[in-house]
Image (cartoon, rainbow, N blue to C red):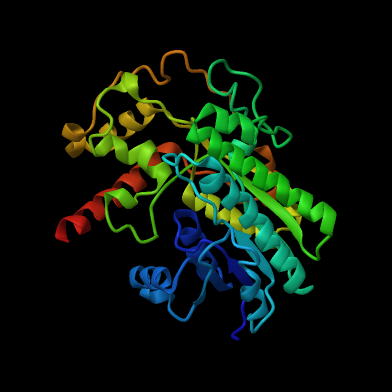
Length: 357
């Protein structure tokens, strides 16, 4: 193997977030083994990024919930892994069976890859980086109605499996899945004392350019969909009816950088880190698109330009100081305008490709 910064096992590589992480890992000189659900998914990724051929090896993990689903990855590794990044976890607000479609994949998938790394990965693995979520931190029952104290890494969502199922809210189901998965990860490390340490990154709404295979409008990822594309595709027809599930964002490129930095930054060891840039509201998105894309005025409602927050909404804020403390000099966040402009440009480019099909 050529000289690299280390060998990384990355899960969920055909997804929105993992595809950006994969790109950055390659750019930074890491060797990567990446899991996808099938060989066909791997080929789709390489079709979009032919320059990645020879720089990443793909392995198939058809069902992350299956017992010992990741064992073969570690057993068959020709070179021991140095790091693991686990991103594979469903983000889908249209499901109805929260246990089967959200909670089980999140929890069992996380514990499964941790266990395989611990039992079969050897002592070479130094760090396990878990893509968590801000929803494991925020209070699902008191997040937007009246502003409370800003969230910190000490906060945990009080949501439970029972309360999520009883609510029949897919958003609560997702919140429970991410909270329970993170709790299970910390418990695993406490109970098993593996050779590696754990870092958990907790982002809020992730937006930004898409590097994964996007075959059509229905393949736009959940967060770019509700936060940006639904303004362009006719879904949102009046400002009063638009409600976001969460009101703070992070650019995909900053989140990806945090994952890569977490692999080798000593201060990230054993840390839970909030990764949040700032406020995002329907009106802020509208204002930004209308300001920067006058040619899209006929596709997007105007709303109430001076009324940034929806009526009765006062979302709690986030303390992101730890991310600056851990990642040090040079760390920072893109602003909302840059993220929205780059995302819209990406979506418009995709629309041109879709029109040619």
